Image (tube, rainbow, N blue to C red; front, side, top):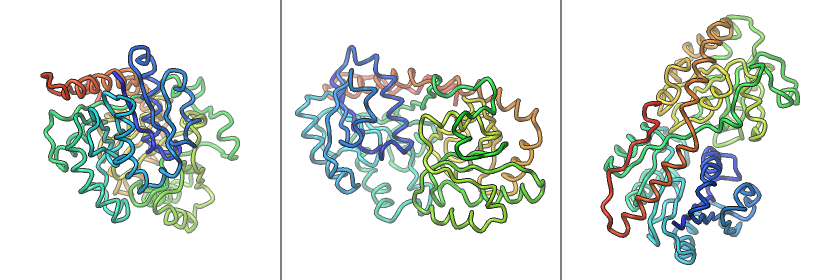
Length: 397
């Protein structure tokens, strides 16, 4: 097969979609011996794909196509032409925001979440309209759709009114060569030292986005924890500023415990595993996730996890983490106190998390994605196909 993949939605590598795409492409590299891959990459992003340049074709995209409106235009007008020029059999767009209307070849898309339907005011009104109305029509034009969780698949069926057999659930994996426990679970290497952090600390890795990532309630819960226990634990927030970040920074500045709340900004990929290993507890109180990679990565590094149950998080974390209602500040504070003071409970969750994380594998995700491509191509030439397979990881969710 000649397989095209659009990569222009990765926002310079600083999003969950970027991490999904990088991991999937690395796992697909062995397939390049049998199939030809064409990656369409914004020019300034080309260095991010150096790992693939020896086995996959990289096609530069002009930087003027980076802004959202231009990028939408490029996907609908220029990319179909490029697909024909490169004689693609299938074109994969890993985000519902850029799915194609023209059909120059078989089309496959990945839907990570349907946040515009689940989180009020997550985006401005234009993006909300695009996600709720236009993306629904674009999704119906695809020959195959991948959902990264059963929760997301249910949302696609409910909100996009698509038949279940058109959707294949392929859970994300974990790169176990990067995310693994250190000999000392609290060894964070140079990452923490550079920020002069003392230990122990709670860690939350998510872009600073309000209200979706629920930072304000976490800060309030941390204040209750500090006031009731007098503990020296700190709260560390890793992630780039996003929509509503100014609200989060203002709330932290007003906190009586502001000196114990650290904002790291964007955490580089090379440092991320060290942060998970260094944290005493990883906390993830998000109001909605289509999958939720950070708690899974934290578990793979041997860090005990407190997680929201919203969206897919309950099915991903399962019984390997302490689950909380993200809107119940008292519950979050109670779990912070419990795990900060009970080393045996942390040890139990550490072991359970490691076992849970081993069930998620990018090699399996890549092979199942290749099968989606095959079915999409076959459907274009009229070959009868079996119903879309539910992922072999279903027993893990």
